[in-house]
Amino acid sequence: MSEALARRLIAVDWGTSNFRAFLVDLDSGECLDSRRSDAGLRALASREFPHYCAAQVGQWRAAGGGERQVPIYLAGMVGSRRGWAEAPQLDLPVTADDLARHVVAAPGLENAWIVPGVKVVRPGHVDVMRGEEIQAFGALALAGERDALCCLPGTHSKWARLEDGCLSDFSTAMTGELYHAVRFHTLPGEPARESADFDAEGFHQGLLAAAHPAGVLHALFEARSRHLYAGLSREQVGSFLSGVLIGTEVRTQRAMYPSAVDILLVGSCELNRLYRLASEQSGFRVREIDSDTATLAGLCALAKHHGKDRHASMND
Image 1 (cartoon, helix red, strand yellow):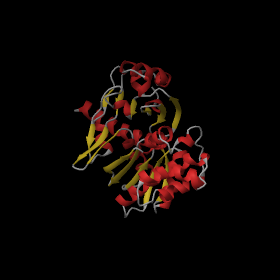
Image 2 (cartoon, rainbow, N blue to C red):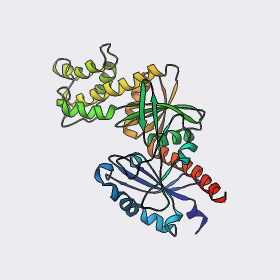
Image 3 (cartoon, rainbow, N blue to C red):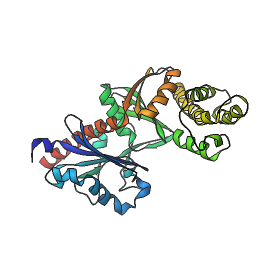
Image 4 (tube, rainbow, N blue to C red):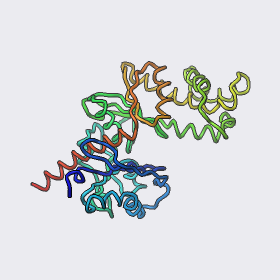
């Protein structure tokens, strides 16, 4: 086997709705090839996971000269009780090295490893995370920092605090899921049922409404009131609701971290644009990092830690 092939890995981000796999050069972090599908956890039974994964990445593994030569690291909800096999959720504080030491062998597929998640269980704060912890560590490495406040937007957005290279705290906001519920299952969201193309003015109005002293429950209803009497068009309602919910999320974090200046915004281009607008309005200075790039950086770092640990244990 050539040295080049020996230094590759397969990084998989497998969530509830999507499967994403990347063939990565371990030294440079460069993505050499990728696969994407809608085969998330909801689409597969537990027994199907090893066969589906092998079918998606088998060509990459074969190019390595044998199954053992290109390891697979899997992050996300694939490690939940509903996924391929349950990996632990580690108590904070957690380092990238801690994650590497607690990976779980994926049943039915040789040299494949499921990354653990993390959890917070404290009086007054209980929270869980799978997948975003890898992105947070990857973003920290890409930024060349030891401390950061990371915003990881999505269906269940995460805000993660890292200190001296250690994930010390995080909180979840179910912003994306609530947006979908309000848009499709409430009276204020009714005008946005058919179309919710981004409208800058509607979004801006939503950001302003998020500051209303009556709170988010009132601000969401303003989509109805403004549509009836204040000129908010049918085409703007979806963006208004998005502005209210993202604005509320960011304002809450601003209150939780009043002294924070910078945030690492780790997401897709589309979501990053919306969160940048809300974050800058709340006084944050934003550095954007693509979520796929952060995932690859995080899994590459974890694989290097894990490789060292396995090599050391074999030599004991």
